[in-house]
Length: 252
Ligand code: PGA
Picture (cartoon, rainbow, N blue to C red):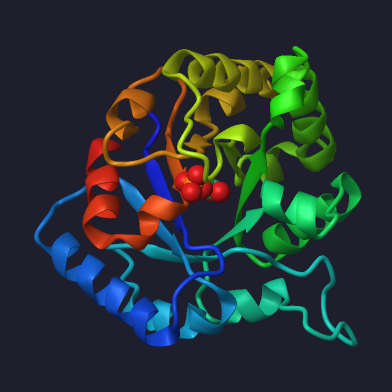
């Protein structure tokens, strides 16, 4: 039985004080629960140190939203994997559609980012997903296949086994429109087939595949109940402590 993960992607939201209040409120609510779900909070870079001070191994982990493709040196503005791991950051979102779109992150760059994360013991949460015209044109499987293959299939089995995948259809992100539970289940099953072909059944069955895109307290239970959906990557709804907790509970 695979564990469930719920990760909160705060994106570029909240001032420092609001961020600290959100973590405190979430922790207070969480302490009263005994959740089996693995919870990961992904605040913006400047708040990572504060957040990791709050993080307690058993309650939640802290992830970054981005990572440099380079090891170290003259790369103004970049944050390296070794910096993150030296701050006890355990996870990193890589290949989010917003980074692919607004920052031109292509497959080549994403492989470098994945490699950096793994070299420094950071778990990549690798995002894939098709845009609306691709879905409407019946190209969604092809697009996701390319993203998974080009972004991850250079890894050897041991490396790949450390990766978490998030299926986030671009048309569902921040739009209030989720994939139907059947659409999510279908794509998760397809991704698992690709993994089986490349790494074998055992690895495919062990790989965690999250769903992301307008997931909220109202629809989470139904999505998480789908076969092959191992939790969620949550954007907007992760900014409200009570709602995020409710989503975490529904992943159990
Ligand atoms: P959303 O974002 O939940 O606000 O749709 C999800 C994501 O982009 O990871």
